[in-house]
Length: 131
Image 1 (tube, one colour):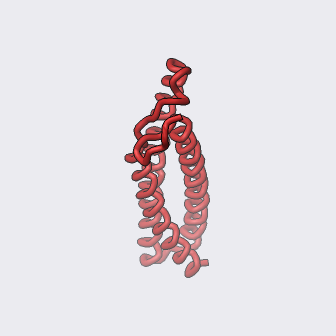
Image 2: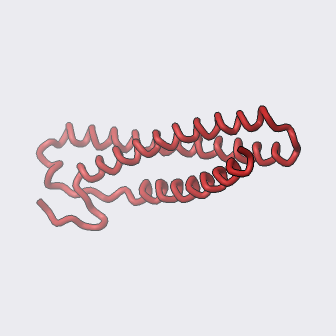
């Protein structure tokens, strides 16, 4: 097998990344559902203007993050389909051939995780004050 390069990887490495990222996307989607449900509970018990603004802020942010997760999920599935088709069409080459690392997708996941982590921290602080 060829030497592993920072920019070129075997197909199975790309597949492993996709599998990991798809699992993370599903986890984040599930976690967002929990956050939304808790936010709805707080909204039903509070009607003050200040808290309404905070609730709307989180509702908007959760919507944006869900949309981003949907796009990431779509992009990952498209690329995973390409890997699958390529592997079926070239079964003899997939173990020896190196492919360009999916740096753009890696960067998108890292950016999403950073933004999501910051939002989650902000939301948990909000919950701590309101619960």
